[in-house]
Length: 178
Image (cartoon, rainbow, N blue to C red; front, side):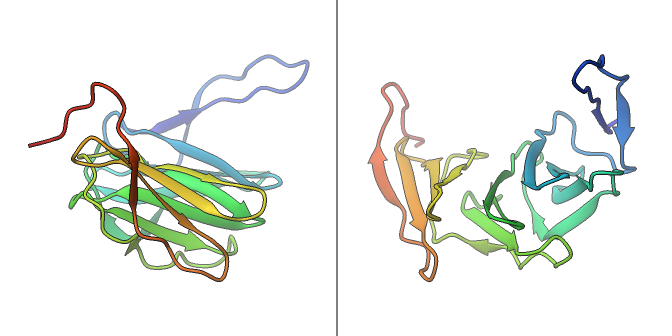
């Protein structure tokens, strides 16, 4: 039915029955990205059936319905990466249909998402997952497999801009795409 289902359990309690959350359907086989950006809040991200990126969240009391995250359209089997760089702030990353990496962010839960923007230009493999991490002192690092089979990395620091993508090596046995 294309719905996202969840369950829950608590200490000294058994797991509850699965139930659908929200009314929107997501693409078949959609990857769900989950992140806790603050206490008692859980955000989920998925690709909807029309290729748009959508989110739903739990506020500690109930699930709110699915909402779009901007107007970027991506291939249906794409996966969103999410990081909580600091309290309440969320960054999202995804590989677009043109094989470039795009990002958006939100500073507060009630704020709208910033427009999607390309993180410099890098041609990744089709639907390459964007690996993302943030360290305790704030820098964000991204990793993606390029069309040539190499792993590329970029970073961002507070009061700075995104650095250009740089190749950092190639895993053995990953051929370039011709």
